[in-house]
Image (cartoon, rainbow, N blue to C red; front, side):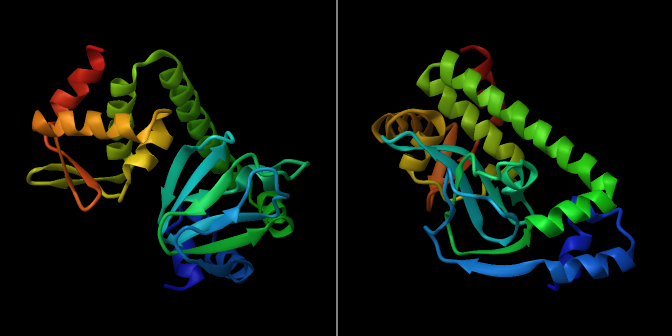
Length: 228
């Protein structure tokens, strides 16, 4: 898929005329990262916006004891926008690939010029940024107020919204997640995640195959959160 064709189907650029899109596409360059590679680290200078062509990337912070996963992005998602929009241009979190990943990237100079020429793109980015801020606030509230079991269940529900695939047996979260990664997303330890997931499997609420979680009974999972 060419850059122009990919960008045409990217929400931020759908309003652009073909002529503008043709000028924009060559500004995006391509990089390939192997699994487990840091694309950038928290505190580094940020000069580039990234759009994922293929693969999976986790956004995380390091609290010196372990990683805290803030978000997981995949094909068609973008990240790195905060640093290129801010004057200080410093990364507020780190980004690491969870599998082999190909990204398009755009440097800050071209990105800012693009926003100046196309105000509609600025509004779309603002809408996405506000949505991500809302979800971040929800995560902070969950980590503060909810017990570990409920945090893990709510995390699975969030993942079904973004990565869920309907199947006959339920909703498959189409991401390979280790118990440690789930722990990093819910502010707990791997052993606790293992215990909670085993309990949910024993109750036939979920199944786990090849590190992917299948929600077998979505209504019951939602009820567990509501009654917590």
